[in-house]
Image (tube, rainbow, N blue to C red; front, side):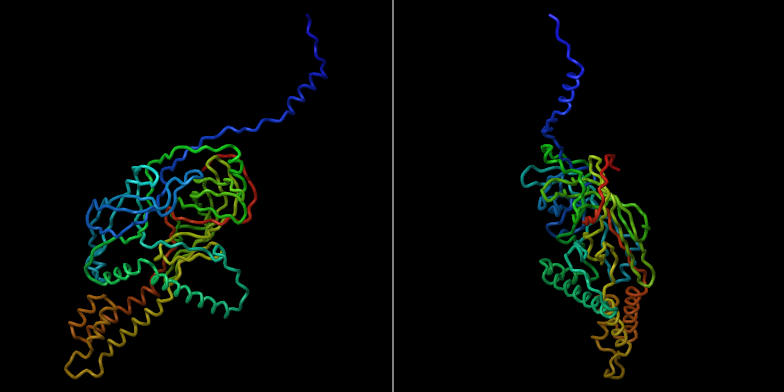
Length: 459
């Protein structure tokens, strides 16, 4: 038998029907490894106070911020972390002399710690290898006015703006005072303040001291399964008014940065859209630059720093252009860093410096004047005046020595020294720079952006 041949038109018709057939949707599940990469910080807060006096002292803390892998929490906040003190260094001669000049005969020693065990509530103990940065006793979260939901300020006159600024400063001081009073650790802080006045004291790490423990080796938490439908939004344009949580890869300082200095951050929490679909996975990279850097100067002029983020790249290599500004960050309370509505940061001068300096000058004047009612042949100064004058310069030691000396001249010298140091430190010394250390936790507000998705490699 001879097979009948198809005409060219029939062949073309069959080929067209075949090409127009709907392509079946890929529904193959995807296995995604849940790995915490090397260098990822685990933020640990000490559970109780620990004395620093020898190597091997045990430490126990809790995970302060949940650690994610891809889009899953793998180390929940509150998990227990164990470690130890690995080094207690000696005090250098120069540092000891400087401390003695401030009536401190037991200056704090440099130390190093490590965390080597992670205890999860739902699993076994996990051995860790970590590199730990120095601890920070009081970590606070700062947010810009716009991020906190403040309404835009109406236009005011110069006098009105000044009055508003002064009122805001007073409210800030009152809020800080209330926090100090209402904080659960207020008794411990009061004890530490009183102990700091003593010439000899033990060195402790306070309860709640925060450490960033960077893992030295990747942590494997297995895999998770996702179908293509769950990943269809991955790498899409970031929704407007979103906020990305990230950590800085390197330290940024107003002392060394300049306009155009590149910066980089790594996303630490997944970003979901309104339909709860994953848009940005953990460990995506954010690239940006410094737009303003003003170093600290003499006469107590503090530094300023402003950064923007311009690009987000996923681990899969999908990149998009964005416009991102800092909306919040976690910093050391003692750094006195402030953040404005546009994401700029600066070190604010404490308003109490005027009060403290005025008080020091008043004490020096009273010490020099002495006690007009003192009988002839006496020291010419009351014990109370001598104690206050000595304490204004050398704390408890100065007060005791001044009372024991019973000399108006000696007490007035101590009071004058304290007043001079107060004027210098509050008004004449070089200001402080804005320093955002490595691994600083930041929140980046994403504004208007244009989609520029392109496939490439992660830098």
